[in-house]
Image (cartoon, rainbow, N blue to C red; front, top):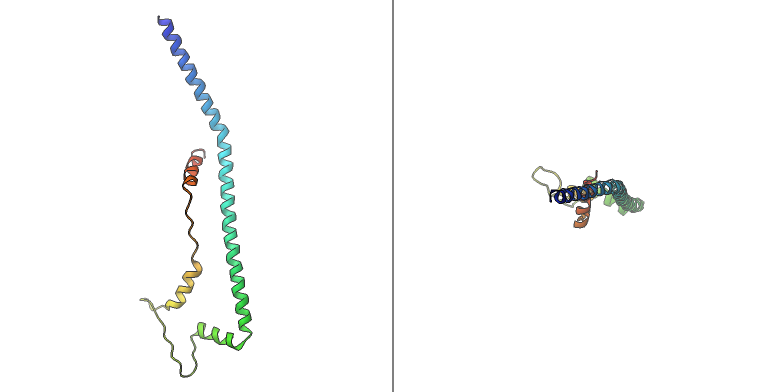
Length: 137
């Protein structure tokens, strides 16, 4: 009777050992794939940021081209002088809105809008996948 229990214990222990070996083998098989996936994900994010930068620079180029075209005409020059140097014609009045620090609000709002970036919400499945991948790093 004791030998049946001993055999059963040996059988369970050997199966557990085989299962642990299989899990360890799977870990070492999946780890390189996860690291490669993480590297690819980083490259994709870098590509997206570069695409955004290119788009932003293209917008800047278009703005500068229109500014250059308007600078060729008297009306464009006058508009530029009015906006940057806050000059007015004789008899006109200028009103400037300032914040509590005394800074020009109109000038700051343009600066803030240029720095604004679009918000992106991360996919919940991507968050979970990233967490799983981080276990293999």
